Length: 383
Image (cartoon, rainbow, N blue to C red; front, side):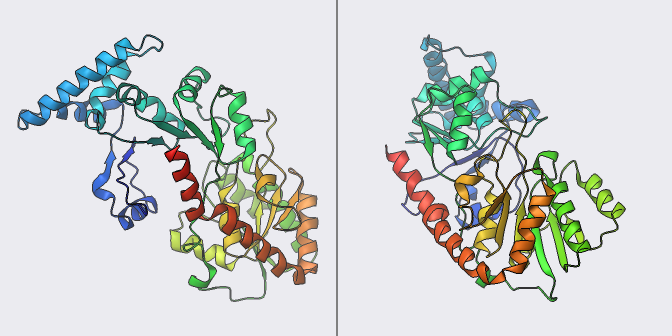
């Protein structure tokens, strides 16, 4: 948008949730946004709109474009297309032959649904791989990933760890480009958020999905240990997920009133939690298969921007994001003892915090500022 380019947005679901919708509105892109599911009754209803007798000119144009696109898919003998792919030409007929210079799919699944449109129109196509879904959730089958990797001019990943992960699961021939996920430093600005801290307690924060692979139980045990040693600590965990009730019960059974779990926070409330936090714990776990691990951990950059000191586990792509001892601190995963020891060291050496915070902010501005990331993406698009 800053380069005066036209942008259309297509979402394959109808989760018009804040904060994404508010960002789209701020950019005046609501009129250019389309929420179209590629399956179910919604897809059928949208496909029928192509044949609208009230708009014969548009209908005729859509029919011609769908026929042209179908013929091109039939001639693409080096690739196979299913009936669903041809149906998707109808569902997304309004995107056929629009002259897009680049089509960017920001996750894997939309790539599959939009592939026939990209092929038929010969659009330049790029996609983003954020990492595998958590254990228990469905990932894209490897044959489909191979197809998408071959089609894409760029596959964007946020760390070298994610790049190696992608190569090992079907993307060995992909043109991988490492560009971290950026954050808006104007939004995550501690000077624009009131500090609501009103006590002398050490404020500790974690933000993330309440899932076994996030390792919250180890951080909880570490904080409980320090509280039992006499340290005045308040630990807030923000998130939702399958472990919410189990973690709440665990905290209650321990009789610890200094630890709380919060869910359903607004963007403003989440920023306030970041602003209040002295230390941010990111206790994510290494997986036993070596695949299902954090690729970047964007909450780390958000916390650093809000001037929290980071204590994270040495897992996945996190060591690429945290310079241990300089912009944050890394400890082994699955060790409440190591987390507690690092927290205690920070408590006893508060004079070191400003240097760590300043180093983290310098790195954020150089590597993770959304404006820097935007320019890197534009360079890739122009290639």
